[in-house]
Image 1: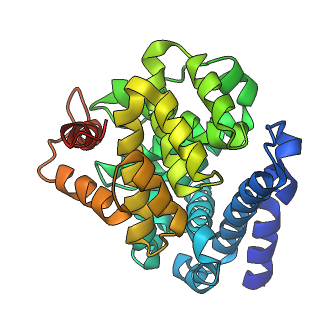
Image 2: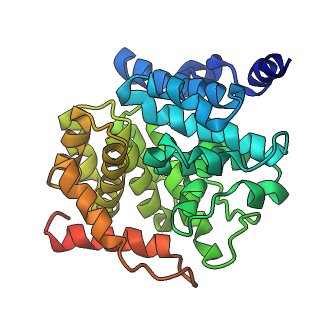
Length: 324
């Protein structure tokens, strides 16, 4: 009976694969290759979600997640974190399943896990957010990136076309709360890679349509997606870099974050190296090392969170290196 219940739970909670169709979402299709890539990312996310919500224990999902193709495995862990976050938020299971998940192999995918938790926040009542959010004082801001991606992906007219600015009043972190809208915008920028089907000219045009004060975060999010998800040629990477203009430090910072996430999980691909060469002027290892150095001795959250300081340090380092 418990196994039957878990199977039923998966069927009830897991969105249908059709939700990942670019045509269904009304997203731009640049070409068949980019469409297939983006839709596979979405399907893999949902596969990870399903494995997690069906598992008796979060660690029981690891074997299935590890069997997923390397290039896409991080997205499966992201989806798994969303599923476990929803279970935590609904209170249908005992204990904090996301934290249990992070005690195993998911620790190598910690950045993707926090982003996946943000997807769960978007589906849960805000009074339950505190029960879901893991406790790392720096990485917890990544959940707002995931929240922003979810909102732009599923509520595109409001968040992308309508330029809605979400200050996230339910965010349970008091210190640095004013930064929340910036983290959400970073997720919206990342979602634009999907909304505009990796078409660089369209992505840039969409970002430039937002108020000027939001563009740095939006370019950063798009730069992270360009590095982590891919779907473009070297020439398109260079075009995006050139079009980013004054926002290049934010793009370099985000690309370094993406490289760090892939390297920590052992999932770097040839595209990762091409993207860091275009945006960071070096290898994924070099770019990731910048993020490691910048994370040392971060201040505690105050009016500005340590996460924002970390990001600024990384961007400034690429400026000092003459890359931007």
